[in-house]
Amino acid sequence: MSKITGIKKGKARRARINVFLDGKPAIKLLPETVLKENLKRGEEISETRLEELAIKDLRQRCFNTAARFIGYRPRSEAEIRQRLAHRGFDADTIEKTVAKLEETGLADDGAFARFWIENREMFRPRSRRLAKLELKRKGLKSDVIDEAVSILDDRENARRAAAARTQRLAGLDYQEFRRRLGQYLARRGFSYEIVKETLERAWKEQGGKTA
Image (tube, rainbow, N blue to C red; front, side):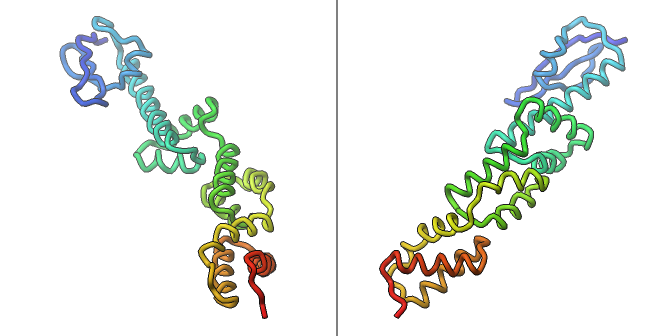
């Protein structure tokens, strides 16, 4: 058994706390870990207890890293795992962290998929096919993706996408208008049939004539 003889925080803003055993530095822990474990000077501590503290601190650091990552915007579980692995955390710690995030509602692929679709719907309408491809790249499961994209209407999204783009194409002749808007819609994954239909409608709505 060893005795805690000092608990000192480093000078850096996010510095961990140095825990001294028998007058010597033994382990560095997050302030959260020290607080949760109620560590105090004079407390006797075994090697087993020291190992447990190291594991708990590692998991807390992993959780904190994940929380900061998803603090900017929602992320898929696959993205979270990828970020944590990139930061050097082991697979077991990552899985336990993701499970904790799920329990607290901070990680939810269904909610992420809905957020992604709603964001795209509002700012950059696209086809159901392209939306599915994007969500697949985010590592989501097929059933989650299918449910999220079920609300999409390709014809309506093509119309909205075209309306947002048409203003930039004012003054072009019929052929150039079709070429540019057609390429724009195709890049957003719409089928040939829907692109053709949307082009004709957009041209007529701006007062154009084919002949």
